Length: 56
Image (tube, rainbow, N blue to C red; front, side, top):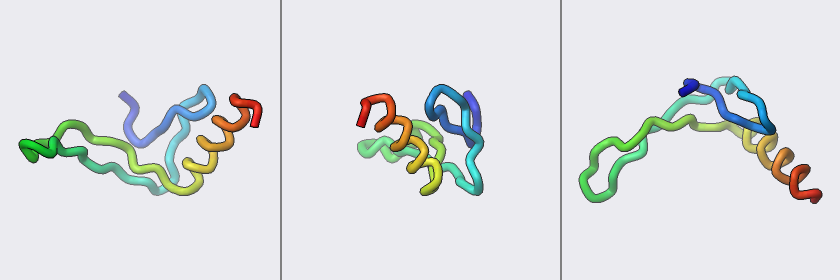
């Protein structure tokens, strides 16, 4: 697994200043996974890639 990167439009993108957060099991309160916390730039890039692939 790549730390502090997201897969956007077929490539691994290094995040600029984003961090990570831990997802917890709501029933037990125990950690399930550590996930990348995307910033606005990464969200915009992912949205643009999704729109382009859908022909929007």
